Length: 392
Image (cartoon, rainbow, N blue to C red; front, side, top):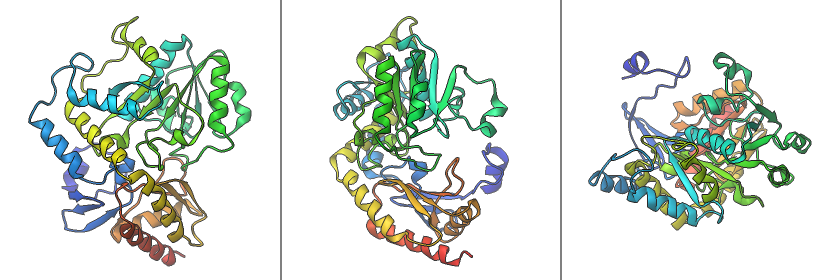
């Protein structure tokens, strides 16, 4: 399978990990060789309830017996999508009451950017340096990492960048700005958390000049930080909320949410302001509904904070400079890129899955399923400490 994988399936790096997967269950992934791997990555934060959670699997199976795809998005009322968007609105601030379902987080970003320009009649978009919002052309345009964007220029225009957590840069948000888009917690940059009321200051400046605030919760969302969404730790409500990854319980989905007044602008002038064939697919929406129900009806969010404490207690070592992040969105910051890579590869050899971050090369990602047990955390952290003790 590995040979065919490398020969026929397009790759994203010269040296993929190429683990040959047999099946996955709970907090573990199993290879075709029969080896068991404890998963501290959860599909890069996507498998929020672990692998093949019974509630998600049963919801998918039940929907399969009714219908799969029946019509392009927005034309027919389909139970799973309607129930999902209604439940989501129930758990969000009042002004975030209408949701557009997409196929992925990066498509949701595209829709949010279009909506912001449509709502304000302005064109300028402001993003943060070291941000990551996806890899489609609009999302890529929000990235200031020249090595990654240069081969694909020209990108969409009228975009400028500010430094995350730097209040002085907020004066660059002006009456020409359509929207400021930020990750609530910067992901690829190393799980950077807002400081000194930063998000509140950004929101105040947006209100002052009539710009919209778009918050990207694709990674922090759905209980990973201990609340349903990371912005709920701060006194700020975005004008447009973008979500994805963990919302589908392991299936591909994204969405952007705004007020009814703003969202309805995509209905006319022009009609079909954003259109997608498979967004809101009934099977995917059924999985997302089951995932949201499980997260909001259980103690998983509160437990995320207790599990964070255990990680921080156990992962103390001279080669760990700090642990960034919140809840089960954690990054181990090591002295060098080489040490981070050595940790990741040696841990995989010993049956523990870790991963890199996009821009912060010295970081090791820890984003396990919210359902991970305390004993599994202890098991995985023991492997990390053993590996660290061997590194010279």
